[in-house]
Figure 1 (cartoon, rainbow, N blue to C red):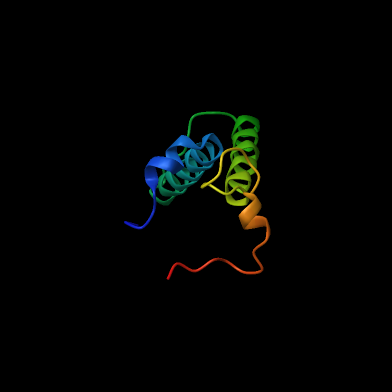
Figure 2: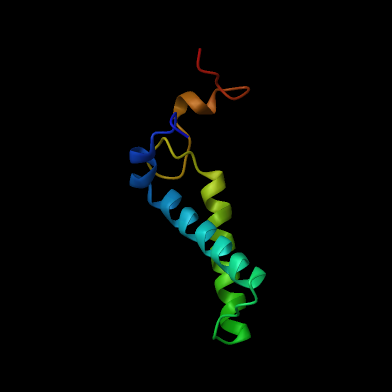
Length: 85
């Protein structure tokens, strides 16, 4: 965790949205474990689940070290993940 540049990640909007979606899923799961249900109808719950799922998936696809949603030119040429020496 200490080798992660959190400052840069929080500047990436797509990553922040994905993190919010992940936190939502975690909170929702924890509440269900303790038997707490949310007070909103089934359609809204499904809509929120779909939207946050899309954002979470998008957050997994993007490279949080570059601006926008595409990889850097250097990363596009990698055959396998780069290892720091």
